[in-house]
Amino acid sequence: MSVTIQQLLQEHFDGFAARQRLSPDMFHAAVQMRDCRTAAMGGHVNSCPDGHFHEIAYNSCRHRCCPQCNGLTRARWLEGWQQRLLPCPHYHLIFTTAHELLPLWRYNKEVFANKLFEAASQSLRELLDDPRYLGARAGLLAALHTWSQMLAGHVHLHVLCTAGGLDDEGNWIEPKKSCLLPRQVLMRKFRGKFCALLRKALDKGELQVPPDTTAARLRGLLNRLGRRTWNVKILPRYDHASGVATYLARYLKGGPIGNRRLLAVRDGRVLFRYRMPGSSGMDRARQVIASLSVDEFLGRLLEHVPPRRFQTVRGYGLYSGNQHSRLDQAYRALGQVPPEQQPPLSWQELCERAGHPEAGKCPVCGKALIAHHHFERGRSPPRLATLSLSDRKGAA
Image 1 (cartoon, one colour):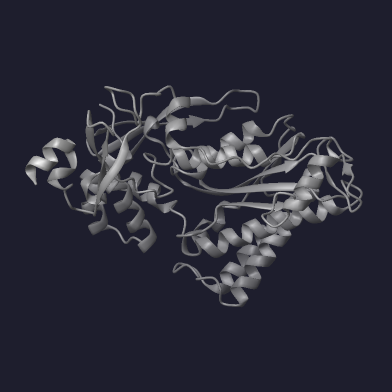
Image 2 (cartoon, one colour):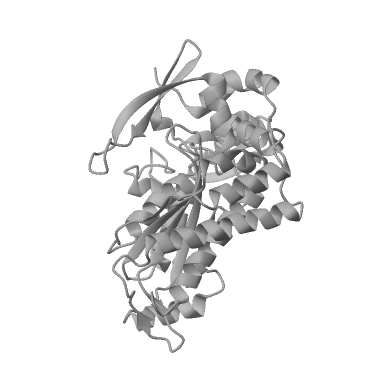
């Protein structure tokens, strides 16, 4: 029997929370996902304007980790970025942090992630500004991921980078090298910057030292890691960036695992699918079934809840929020007309794209349903809300 994240939380979260110490962000996320689209969230009534049909609709939680209610937000983000992405090839880069730093991340998620964004973006911009490699301003779109397929801690940054950039005269410049940048050069610069930023934050008291270590040991660890090879990948360039953007959108909203990967709960253990990489770079990943206790599964799931209002996707260079004029200039340099901003996608349009054109419409006459009689959390809709107009007058 299949299971969902919401069902797991509804059946097991109270006991799990009594046994575990949860941060306010983790507790808030779990409650929101548990109560999503239930009476606990409040709701409204959808009615046909001619009174043919009425239905009670409970509110979505809109938490970014909820796998149930983020389809529209994810689609809007993707559509907005697909309109902005420059019509040129792009590179996909991955910056992975050392596994030994996971305890530091768990106690300092916001500071740790900010330093990761800073180190990766600075490394790329400094190297791409160098005439030996590009000598121009590129567009960078960076997205933070903190999990592996098994939901274990795996903090890394995906970066989408334009294969070219705009110079000071407004000309489009192509990369000097087919691989964009030498991987070892990029790795050493990123490694040095990230370790230096963490050491500086530690010296300023911005980092909470995990209870099983000391500040001196952390400095020693950073020094040792500064002499090791880090995992920085520069994947072959893509002629169209929409595929990578779609991949990033998949993890932007909805949490680290979707309901489709969950299989069942048996004997207090959660069964779910995950991809196991092939034994060599040429082998394709294969699907494997994993088994975790309910407590361990929920613990891993909630560990990846980002701090509230933390921005997990950021643009730099031509893709930064304050560089719209330069982005338009880049479009013209590529011989293209800057796209006009389109209105945001509606949920009815999303349903039509998904093959459900009848969603949000009266099953009798086909007219769009109208939302009314909004009610608060834990309250029932007013009795008159689902009556026809003539019945309401009679009841009054």
